[in-house]
Image (cartoon, rainbow, N blue to C red; front, side, top):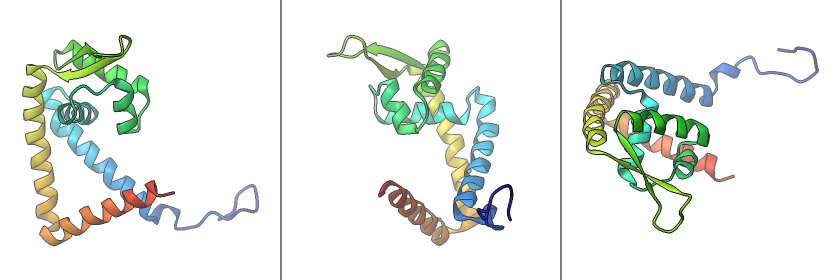
Length: 151
């Protein structure tokens, strides 16, 4: 395919591996959002909560880097989750301008419910693929993550 300049755009551009990964991620995120909606959570909020659960005391900036989103996006979600009583900000013990993020009891409860939903989704995917393909997929995705981090 050619457009306004002489550079060629491959006809199979949307058939590339990276697009297949992205389509799978979009589909999984949409499914998570749909299933988490009755709990009043979005998939992005689940992701934030599970990361704070796994690493209590993360700062908003650390979380943004980990999730590859802007600090503003994290701040917005943190504010929503804090207003609902799921998260709390605590002063950092050494840096007075830094706040750490921690789950509240209500946050741990909603996270347990949300994680059960995510486990069901993952089980359905694993059942569809079977144990061998599930294991292969996980290994391949880990290799992709390593490959794109290498350069």
